[in-house]
Image (cartoon, rainbow, N blue to C red; front, top):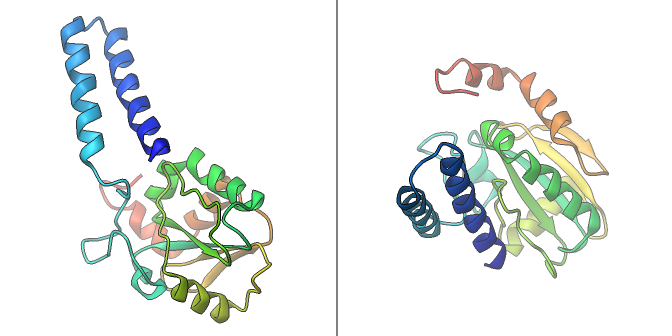
Length: 189
């Protein structure tokens, strides 16, 4: 909650400073910052890009992500694992790119102790039974750190035993046939 509040406050400050740089009167700057802060606080913390209206915003199963998202499965022994934190930081640094490409961080934790969700990146924390099922499906032992990028059809596109940079994810995703189709839409990035 503290991290979410910090992010909302930072957004309100950016609005205020942006208007200050444009010589907007003090009253208008303050009002815009308050409106920005209030509207952001009312939005759900899980707001993220949605591939289409048929897709769940917060899927609870890997099957629900099929043809909607590109799940980035991050298997980790613990929620406070350094490699997991590094992967989350990578994604947060380029959250807009991840949203544009419908990448959904999906941590698969053997022990969720100490897990901190990303500040900005789209993510889904699945129920423990679903995480265990995914571990069995991909044959990943509990003590292993592993990153798998799945295509929208569920095929494994990338497998890495180390955190993956967003540049590498972007380059790989941008070569996928369905991404090429997505980019032809008028509102695509």
